[in-house]
Length: 156
Length: 178
Image (cartoon, rainbow over all chains, first blue to last red):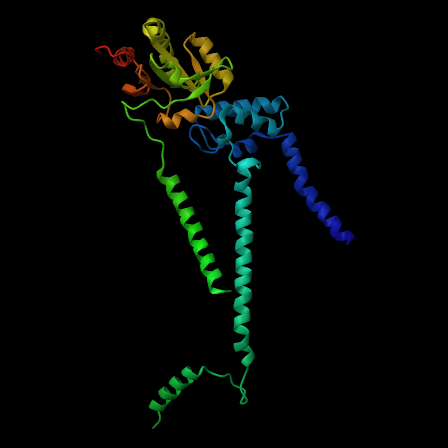
């Protein structure tokens, strides 16, 4: 139990610590990946438009001034609107964009699980039939009849 | 699973797929298109660049409007700003208003542009670019002309204006022979 808790703590630390560091000390490349050029709608990292150059200069200046990632993004959203963000914010109506895909995956997994369970239950009676007295499996009567007919043709 | 529930679930699944397909189709085919000349100019209310006051386009009804879309990082916008300023000074007493719509820009850059160019005509900030789609603006600068009845007239000039473009279209907007 203690080991499990320790493992969970280590895993949480490896996830949370870099995120916190990124929030406090953002870099230009990571912000470029999280922002969109308002004129060409490409990632800021890929855009060569004049406004993208200006945004990069702004981000560099704000990083040098000690702004956090959230502060820089908030200023850019204020200037250009939410469409400047590569991913929608996790609040308000935009939260749906995060929740719906997860809900879809959970729902789909549930449906597949239920169908798999039902399918396996339906197959069980056939499997339960098992081999006959002579050690062989039963054939479907219709298949058995057709097989007999076919074999009869070769009887000489 | 009872037959009725199964049918309802299947119908719901088909409905969801149909809705998703409709949404996809709408996103693919629905593009903002340029408004037609002669039609009412799409209205907007936007804040002035250097104050908290709002400008409502419809409030300019009764005047001819030169509606110019620009951004500070746009090279040709720098070239045409003096033309627009000159037209504003020449025609403002004849019922013409030049309105600049600054979009996809930083406030501070826009203000610096206005100061350097000595612009005195009203400038509004469209921070989220909400008017661009309604006017079919795909780049900067672009200019529309609106008559005193609020209809789009003359030419939609996509690109830098010339003095002749301005004179001709202002006269059309005023209802004078061009």
